[in-house]
Image 1 (cartoon, rainbow, N blue to C red):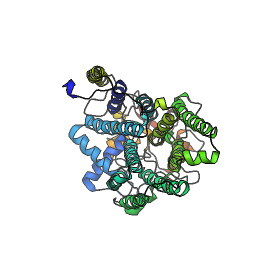
Image 2 (cartoon, rainbow, N blue to C red; image 1 turned 45 degrees about the horizontal axis):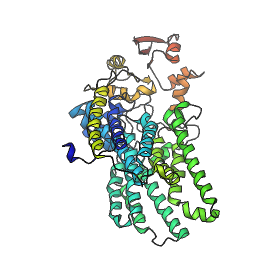
Image 3 (cartoon, one colour; image 1 turned 135 degrees about the vertical axis):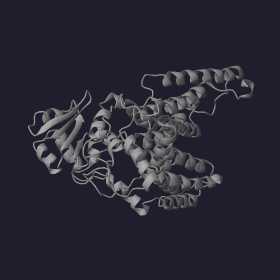
Length: 504
């Protein structure tokens, strides 16, 4: 059987192992804060249809809500019912492996050699690992990479314009699975504008036809209207625009711009430095033998420039958007490095020797089995039917059981990170104060939550304003210590993790 396989190069084998490792990592990822309300929403969709108003929290009860994850939530609920949490791990593991595979193809398509491809694929993993897991947001990387690959293939081979029609069904799926679909439309627009300018400024002998790109943009935009909310879904980004002082994104770590004094952001800094190094090196090399104007016309692809500028800006917005930067810019970085230092490119690559190439298949298989065994048997592996409630993000299971025994008129104030779990456990009997759906809380609720938990001078009055009579908090929180000293409150339940206070 080994003799029938093509020789496998050692670096290709390592890249393959890295891609498969990306698909296995959800086993080790802790249960995400938002997993729980995604599953509850999937159940709601299966039983009642797609929701249009918020019914999970009493603080924003009845507010219009666009459940833009509705299709993947419905799928998540169905997979969980059939296969349990391991089914969700497999589903999102395939998404992560698929994203890594597409980035690998992009790197190779743009000319990166095997070693450079492996290193940049590793950098892609480092930049995106913090967002991996059973989370709908990782679909953004998969869809964006697919768009990018289709558009680049058309640019390199215009005769394959039929590939652009694949963008329409992909747009329908992306629109109904995640709100980042807008970045796909932006990418098509960048290709359209960039190629129009390239054709106009550089006057190539065979200009790239831009009419197919225009039709792809119009068709993909129209395809986004195939959703339960029609044109209202286009208004979704307004939920992420600052509304005076009331912008919930100010309080969410994933939407905070990276702190470059933090060593954890060094890989991101390294990618910026490499981009600048490639740009400077190529510019100096060209300027040494020709005029600057000719250097620009010979080396500055305006489509690539638009991608680097747009997605670098997007990547600087926070960890939530860093994967989009990694998908788009790292392949262009590979192209620049390969053109600047040809030894890093793929043009002069040699095939693996036959003997070594067949041995690498065997070595890769053994390595894969070893890695899979280590991951599946690790102490934090999630292999049970139900998602784990302990680990990095522990959830108050016992306290939720206590709350389920309280009357339906309970007005609960809860920790932000536990809101989704409480929706999963207590809805519709009890509604929460706040949860991870940041687009719902565009008023003063987030500000009031911060004021209460940070013990602002008016925190007791704020609890009274919302008619709170029950509070669930981490036992170590400052607010729990303060409520323990308040005469009007008593401790109803406590364990090592959580404490429940009730008004006397």
